Image (tube, rainbow, N blue to C red; front, side, top):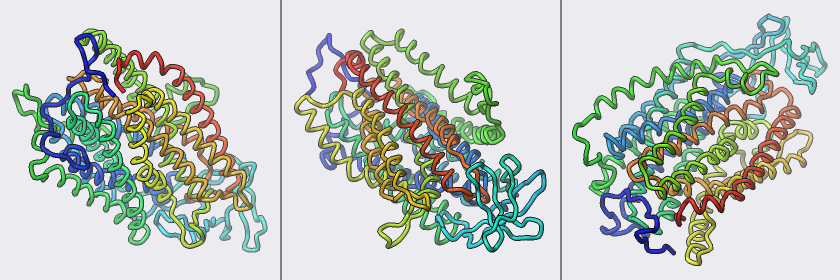
Length: 603
């Protein structure tokens, strides 16, 4: 229940130009929510469908190895969330949210279609004591399916030898009778692959185009949802939760269908399917029968149309992003013992850009709000910035889903479903989407029920619960690894349990966070603040790639050579993740009371 604002009490920032609710409702919400729901659903179909395939695509098709693949994945997802900082600002000042979303949708469609041109798979080989030896993959399918019949063999001194990794890091080369024909000591071998430089360039260009498109699309579709609700409308949180269901409906469909298309027809069809549905997203925001006519328009004080120059600059950003990707792939890890400063110095240019942007933008916005806003607005912005900082931690740990957890599913998970059929590793990410679709309505009802009785937890408390939840999910999976058999593979349902726990945590932070930004931000910078929200996720995505690199294991042709070493590596990283998450969740719970005072009644 919200108190009526008085002259001395804080007011929620007014970011609306009209009240769309006056024209009728859709499930109790403004009718335009349907079109925004659909636009976001199809965009998320494309994004998550492609994302489900990306790490496996990099490790199996391009044979980049764990460290390079997870690093590139982290860099790509970081840029996807960094560019909204610029896209939100441009929409606020010049384009309006609607034109920005349309342009972003077209850019992403082009990017997905470009990504589909992967060509022939890379040819793996091993370098042993400086000499190259070809790797032959038997029963190989250039597809995301985790095929247990795939066998990597090495053509070594005229023999075809199977490969087995030893616990001490050495490599055993096995003869046909299973005997060890040769042992390669640890540090004397390295995985390499012969790749077409043109195909690698196309891959990085595609990722660059998608990153730019996301910058225009992502912050502004959420801002348009915020515009649908009048000042003080308590339906806002539940509206964002419904919107979030659209995200996860698209995620579910994409993570089921894109891997199936890739399995059955090949990588180009799986990745190209993402481009097709992106065109559907563009059509929904472009042809809406006038439902979005009063939402997301250019600012009223925009005296000149600068859209063409903005679109041109966006296209010119593609080669700049391509350079960032190439720099990321060539960055060497920090030398052992170099410390934190050595780590910072070893970061790629993208890493330095991300951390630098975040460290500059957060205090700059706080300083601006001190001079431009009232004392109440300043405190509300301060609360938002504290929560944005903790948001970095949550997504760093949560976003192992597309990297280390997908590789864990591929290598150390029994993917059989009751013995009836098996999932592919990318499809396991769908446990998150399924859980969100089932639990989001429940959580929406729970928040509404508690709110009516003035018992709903504050936003900081929800954030703290989310952090502790993501840690609990990893602990649940680690518990499951204690029951593995001789194959060193955990049951599928332990991994599913992790995703269910993570989904509950996600529902405590992500839709609540989007709504929080629209409620705590000073009205004239709400788009920029939405960009800062996604910037925090961008930093988290990059760090998530770094964390996933700690779980890297040696492979041959994309296949792990020792499942016990692989399992032990993942367990060690997951335990550390859970300890950090739970500890920081407790810290945030302790800070929730002063933060609630700064929020001045915003719930």
